[in-house]
Image 1 (tube, helix red, strand yellow):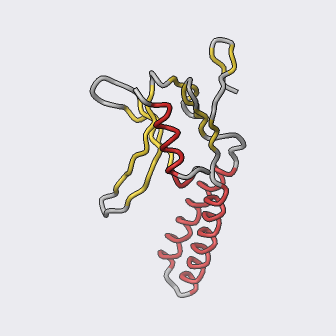
Image 2 (spheres, helix red, strand yellow):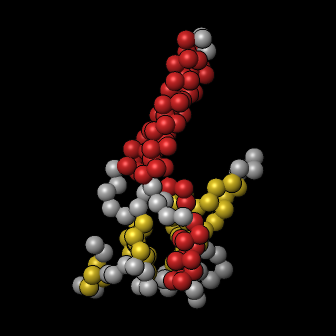
Image 3 (cartoon, one colour):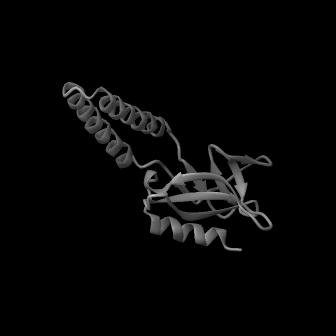
Length: 149
């Protein structure tokens, strides 16, 4: 539990990693491994190596998320807590949903926690919205409630 000046922080919301997202990653690992084995049997060893590497990347990412026992994010009136940042008040940071676009046009939605500043905001942490066990609309409503101002 987070501590500040000897008092336990009360958080209205705790958000965990999505178990269905972790299970979907496990499914993709099996698909990539199967395709990698098939590609190796066909004689394309570089393709098999690439597919095996993709399966390894996805599996490491899924295992890292599956090993987290507690919430990924906790937030409420007093501020926000993440394992990476610790506790930050809303006067120190702002949390917003941002759309990231790749050079090929693929988009992904992230929860970005940025430091409040004068002209620029430095992003402290970014968490993919698909990895969280809450729908994006609800998360936006909760964040708007606490980060106003």
